[in-house]
Image (cartoon, rainbow over all chains, first blue to last red; front, side):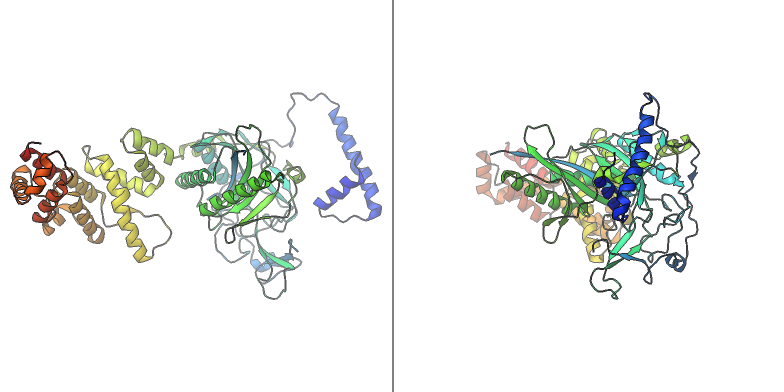
Length: 94
Length: 487
């Protein structure tokens, strides 16, 4: 069972702001997800490789050839805030 | 009082020398204006798909092959989640439980693993624009974001700061000669973190470690590790405990400060990267990597030692500086099978390098290594010069004068010897009368010599040198003196 502290911890890691009345439902939902995984845990999976994807060996590799980058104005235009040459963000040290 | 042992493991991040980024085709150019090499993939736009740069994998495999590690048969990437503006996706694509290379060894230090991942962007903290007071905002340059990195992790087998820095030099030279990275610490293409702990001598369990981040020169690495070991030792001796934390060493003040704690390892929430399911390493890529590994510094030093009979120190000097090693081998080639290999090594490693470095200081040349191949002294000329000295056609002092001329003007040693009249006073026939004259002029010295006290022979050698204008061979003078006096 996921408790309130765990929810708040994961919220911090994910930079999510939760209101007080959201914490309890979130704990319930996350517990349900984990409960489902525990169902899988009941199976005997000794010697079975974990499935990390169903498209095994379909990832292509790319040749080391340059492609065109975005014009800087276009790239910076996508950002909520920018200086003349860079993406402006709240200082992580503040 | 308890004696403590230092235990150090290193983590080295190396930017791989590809033309483009790890997961997109943006070109990598150091020093270009900020944010001129970005695209939706490396900016972390929703809906984009990363595609692995095969060359980065090939370079990573070369590193693994050079270390003799176990090379992975498939590529498996994981997401390492943490929020920081230098990471636009909110996670770094890295490797977790299946690194590209497992194990291996370089010199005296074993390796745990080598994995590949993408580099973070460059964050400039505040004030830079001038428009914002204080430190409330930062500016991100995503040019570097997505650069392919190899992270090399050693086992905790290093026992001192000095060992750490000398091993790192070996690593840097090995990677440089492999050609997988620029290994430029100032520009950040090679960065080093150190995990440091101490324990009472004899203990087998590891003490609590701290991580010293991002030291960008060999000197700072040594200073930083020594400072941290001193700090830990003082703590433990005061009966306190070392806290597991991440630290920053300030080389200007020598102080160590705690960085605000990042999330612990389990909080990175690693999980398989769903955008890139595991893929087998293509055999042609593996073969190409294996074929590209050249002879590396340690192997070359070993060959110089065992096959050519060089002293350990000469062998390492010439092998660890590729330009010197190449020039040395060319000189041996030009000098034929009879060349005195140790002498050739000495003349290159000491005399020639010293002169070329002095010359470079005058020219204020850049940071690149001295390369004798770029000098006016051809390998053939050096081979000839060494042979002249070894065959006693000229003495060593004269040889050094010849080398001065070769470094400044080039040319053939024999021509310089003739032009400057440096030829040694020939064999015993020519030298004997001069020695006899010197003995006749110094009866007191002769008396001492006869009693078996050979110290004053310097006076005879000096007199002969003066008479021959320094062209005699000191050893030869001594031999003839002994012969004349029947000693």
